[in-house]
Image 1 (tube, rainbow, N blue to C red):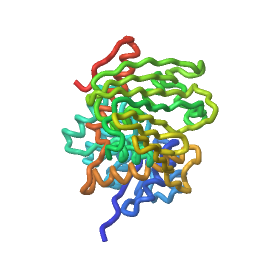
Image 2: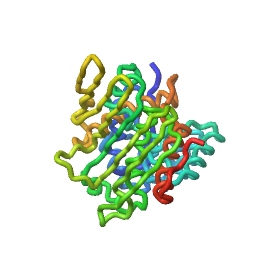
Image 3: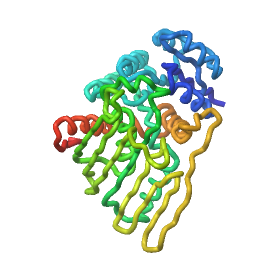
Image 4: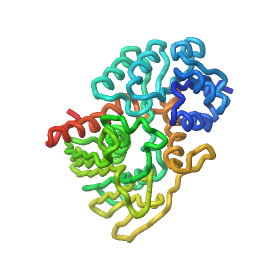
Length: 342
């Protein structure tokens, strides 16, 4: 029997308390060590999940433990140095999104790992939500024909700042935090874009960044995709963290509707089925859809980095998502369309 793959985690913040138990759901993985510059936080989280070793110095962790994968779950401004440290120690690395706070730093991180021959992946879990995976299967089956238009909506008034107060201080908020997920879903479902145009707004006066964004993308396939994102929308029913999708094709339509319903319509009529996520005991009920997707994301990344599979969200792949994110900011700044993917 093969020994479990050893995962070491950097960071003991909000998301670590869910990514660690998600690792423990995989039978061929063990969480061997945890590190946070606040040693007390590292010890408390390690004790909570039975992680045998904890550190307050990431280099000491890498020297002492020699993990098979380093999982970086720290704030974006630290990502470049933590990824470079993993590359220095020749340890495959998974980095939390966004990969970096600007496109050039993200590109540098990918170059560092290429030059060191160290695999780099990005923990982009949204595309691993079960309803979105099932929608992709339906789309690929051809049941609605070739898509010509789609709309993705993530609109909410969920108090995201209560458990992640640092989000209030970000100069770039909803596009960098949520847009990176939604635009990755666009690529997952529909391929690459040619150009985009974006408008952003700040509705909440107590935050620094934008909390509303609208992005229109022209895809290489010829279809048009509109993305609407908001943390300022008080609607009849709070649907956080669901994203809703409507795809129009030459032979019908596909819809991901509230409460995980997928509806496929063509000349034969409409067929509906519900595709709820698996619920884990450690998940926060408010985030259960997201937390469920972490497990499948982990499984794909560890197989891609250490096994025979292919990681979907490599550093190279994620650069194309970040081109859309930072291209959206540039479009909003200039108030004009931006070419992407050149």
